[in-house]
Image (cartoon, rainbow, N blue to C red; front, side, top):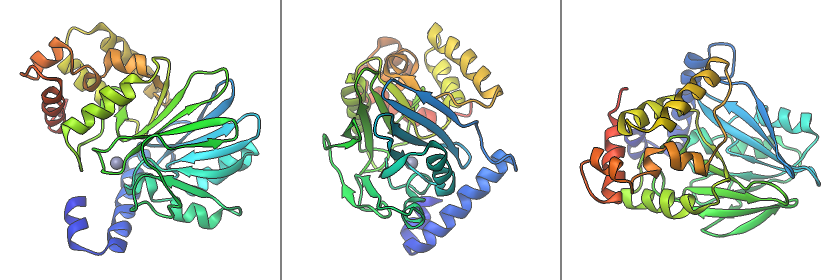
Length: 302
Ligand SMILES: [Zn+2]
């Protein structure tokens, strides 16, 4: 649908149609309860991360530096929810971190900038991102109070996709992976190649410290784990994670964060260098395995 729309009609019409589509999906999925999961707060030593569910299965994140109360928000597609969280927290919002230009991530930027009383810097790696003020590239850095942010360029799902890697004193690092790395899965290769996803998952995200906490853009964990079980049949870690994720979802709880170590243990797309995964993918190279697995997942009905 989106490829057809984006090549045949003006951008404003695409934005309008896309917004209507996602809102209808959210209503179908969430009914009038409003949210697909409960809001959960993760308290780390120097920062607080509020998991803010949006639309049918998206996550926005409010990151607050505990010392200065300066805050940033990741992919604020539903600005009213964000504004409410900022107010409750008593935080000083200064930045929007956009992972990529797709509407369900960047579609709230302009409205949030309009509605918020103070100035906001909008970071992202793609000119298609609404209200963008700071175009970033690989290894660019900036701060949220005492929190150091490093941009990791991970093109493939879109050509301008950025992951944000955060470090603060006395705590585990944190990474926001948008639609590049999901819990037990990865994003579709809309604008890139298996080689690029291999670089993103294996050479970049895979080299972050094992204790890095992973916050991704969607709640796709249960579906992803079904595919992981199909690909990686003899992996007991996948079965354990399925049990855990099912219990979380039954209680309406998010399955984020995971960690880089956990992803290496259960995520077939981060395990493409292993013989058991390459056997399943009928190849003997990790880039070809990445390509074949993504293709198989695109058609997987579980
Ligand atoms: Zn996307």
